[in-house]
Length: 404
Ligand SMILES: [Zn+2]
Image (cartoon, rainbow, N blue to C red; front, side, top):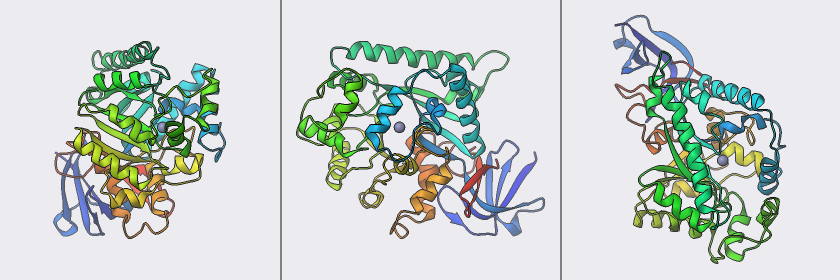
C-alpha cells in the first residue's frame, strides 16, 4: 500500500492546532493512518503552504435556493428578506438545477465534507444522489394553521419520500454511489413564525430520536409575535392571505413558546439565534437538560451580516457552554458557500479572540459539526481510521481548497 504524506505550515487535527514539523499520513483513499513528527515520517513528504484541516461540516444550507445568488440585496432586514424569498418564484427549473450543480461543486472543492441541508422540495435530490458530499436533509415543514396541519405534514412527507426514492436508486445499478448509504432525511419545523401548534406536535411525534433543526430568533419581531400577537411578521402573513397572527399569544419569547413542543429524544439545531437574549439561553439549556432533547447552536455569521448586518451573541453562547457549529445558509443570503469565510467572520467579532481563538472556531467547523450530525465516527478529525477529507486554508485570504 502506498501512503500520502502532507506537511503543512500548520496542522489542525480536529482537536488541536499543531505548528510546522508535523506530517499527516493517509492511505490513497484518504483514510488517516497517523500524525507524526517530520523526522519519523520517512521520505516522499509533500510540503504545503497553509493550514491543513479535516474537511468542514456545513451545518446549515439551503442548496435548493442557490439560484437566488445576487437576487436579494444585502441589509434589507429579515422581514423584507423573507417577503422577497417567498414572492420570488417561477424560476426556470433548468436555472434552478444549474445553480444547484454549481453550488454543490463549490462546496466540495472548498473542502466541505458534509452538509445539513434544508429543503421544501426534492429539487436537490438528483445532484445529491451523485455527490461526494454527505447530506443530512432537513425537509422543512411550513404550516401556518392547525386546520391544515395534517395535510401540510403529509405533503412534506411526500417530499421526504421522493428524496429517499432518488437516493435509494443511487445505491443500486451500474452507477451506484455507496456513500449515499449514510445520507439521512428528517422532517423539521421551519421557524416559530411559520408552524402552528398542531403542526409542531405532529413533527415531534414523527421525529423520535432524530436530528432536526429550527430557525431561531432571527429578528426581534419573532418574540413580539408570541408576546403580543403583533409586529412585523404580520406583513409576511399578509402575502399568504392571513390577516392576524395564527399562533397563540403566550406572553413568552418565541423559543420559550415553541421548544416545549419537543420532548422526543431529538437533537435540535437552533439556527442563527441572532437576537437570543441571555435569559433565553439559560432557559433553553435548562429545558433541554430536563426534557430529553439535545441542543446544537448553529451560527451563520455571514448570512446574519448579509440580512441584518448584525451578529449573534457569540460570547454568551460560549459562556453558557453551548455546543456551537457553523453554517453558510444559502445563496439567497450569502456571498459564497464557504466555511473558511464563516470562520473568518467569527474571528472578526470584537473582543472574541481570548474566548474563541482560531483553534476553537476550527473545532466548530469540523469535529463539533460531525458530532452534532452523529457522523464523528469517520468525519471531523484526523484520528486514525477516519476519512474526513482534508482542506487547505489560506489565512491571508480566508479561502480554502480541498486537498484530500
Ligand atoms: Zn436558513
